[in-house]
Image (cartoon, rainbow, N blue to C red):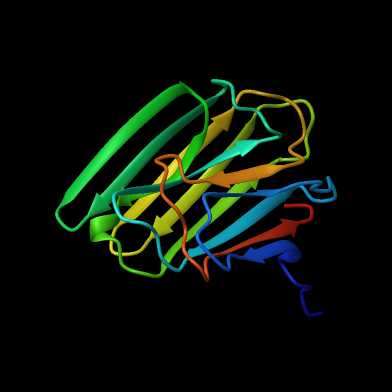
Amino acid sequence: MAAGATYTPIASTTFSGSTTSYTFSSISGTYTDIIAIVSVASASAGNFAMTVQFNGDTGNNYSVTSLEGQGTSAVSQRQSNTSQIYIAGFQAAAYTAPYTAIVSFNNYSNATTYKTLLARESSNSAGAYVGLWRNTAAITSIKFLEPYGGTYGSGTTLALYGIAAA
């Protein structure tokens, strides 16, 4: 018997101009996990990053541990009590399109545990991120944003997929 599709499309968007953020709202609790696929076509110069916030929470309720590398250098960081979770970050001067990130939002619909995410990103650099949102509410909205005041260029896409019984 052939297996069914692993990912079920939930929502997607493609930016038609420079954009600083985008929110997927009214996310159904149908699935156990959500996967986001991010493809940044271009970004403004300077520091570049992508972060997420959940359910409109801008408080210092997030933590993230990251490991990033580019060529012969690597850096590891830990941020606690921050207002967002980094899922990507590097100097735009070294950026080459396309930039891609895959983010797993684990147990997002569970209303009894804190929420975690795992993110992997790559272009000419690579990074891995583990994030925690210290809230037991089910995630019903996810805001993707550029925290340094930069913009994502036209052609950038964000897509959400649900995974049932992960």
